[in-house]
Length: 312
Ligand code: GH3
Ligand code: MG
Ligand code: MG
Ligand code: MG
Image (cartoon, rainbow, N blue to C red):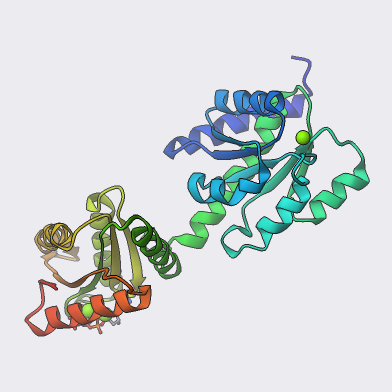
């Protein structure tokens, strides 16, 4: 009440957006030196179902980006250490974060100053007010757009799994973490056996369905912390962070069994397919390229030894 009509309608649509995000709440990073202001923002957004992290010292932004993985940054402008625009500019120079939305949230009302801040890498400028609905509206629209963009950038369109670029980026990232934490890591390359025959005998669209069936299996059975991706064509990759080679081998063998037991549909009946995989463990000093090569060699051995098996 007392709100313009279109804002009410907008809020309706936002409820819808927020509901759609039931997959997981939007992650919002609030950068603000003021305790009072940050707390208000956090309260508003948390009540709207978002997940909020507050950063009082902007100089620690990269730690927050790395750990919290925000889908939007709400950036104060005036802070003792440096200005929000300076931080925005630094964040933008970082390849991993150059597309994350940065929305300034400040008491600054000068249009000139606002435009300057935006030119430094901000996507929008909101003036701090007591209108929580407007804040929620702006944040959920921007975070929803970014989530769609991310999905499009990181997922393979046929299977919905991580795409080649993202799975190799994740591997590099996980290797760095495994080295820092001195934890084990395993990596698997999967390749469907005699897939050319599937295409030749049953057609390309049946082949596509086989690829999708394997992707679904990987999505369902690769446990939370592990990542599965479509490496290319009928080849898939799985990263097993914090997992020993023997544990990863057990999980891969389980997947192999499940896949070979799937009844795959074609026009008039069912058929079966198998995959081979190569598994390698991260050894000290190994690069992601070396680990991929090791898994590839193990895959080659699995193929040479008769397929439908996990090579080590
Ligand atoms: P191997 O057991 O040695 O792996 O035999 P293969 O026939 O599977 O050989 P290879 O892995 O070299 O061949 C992969 C084939 O997969 C070639 C290509 O036509 C087909 N393929 C690649 N991507 C797709 C896709 O997206 N859809 C379909 N239907 N086929 C694809
Ligand atoms: Mg401030
Ligand atoms: Mg292949
Ligand atoms: Mg193959």
